[in-house]
Image (tube, rainbow, N blue to C red; front, side, top):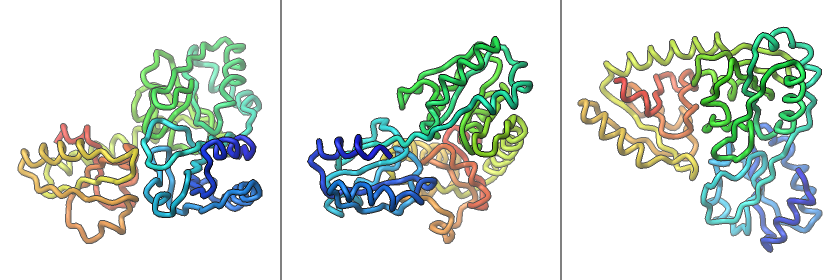
Length: 307
């Protein structure tokens, strides 16, 4: 966290009482952030609720705590409205992609053109990686993300930095498989994931093909199902009420029984007692990949047309 910059922004808002909101991967640093901010005169409350993006703003909690501002760490603003002012701290991580690009150069250089992508934390790897690939004779394309406004930045709900792109392959540089797999599910082109933590390069084709087969099976199950539960969250950036109402109407027109299930954080435990055959996800579009946790098929809104 850039304590100096964050302090200036909070003081500009004349904020004193702050709700600190941190994604799961940074929770271990919450106390350190708090200590630094308290030294600058702020009163800090640490939100321990899960936080998955800038779509997940705890403005109602901040209001109930009489906070003057929310400090949202690890994401950038993409327009979610809040009753409480928000300061965003992107929390970038320093990393050098060149040694790993050199390590896996033989698997990368077979592509003449590549769309280069990453997440907010690793945006600073884009320029050196682009130069390295250009020097190898590879054409590098950087698309502008619609929501974030940053070249090459992926969001879990917005892949406009990647899709569509007229290239031979995609190269994701970062950590985890969530984002590169998200690209792979939207394209038939090769998607390579260069993991800065494991130092491995993985082609996402096998994972993609497996998930596509599972999705086709779930749609088949849904075609014969009678009872549907529409999952609707109250998170301000994920609540698609109009979409849920339209899907309820479509399913009912097909003779299905439909129940709209509303909660903030969607977890299997909250809906254990609800007797439905299939869920339709009207929250984060990537939640359908959690079907193993829910032990029932999860469809996204676009899948309803195939029932």
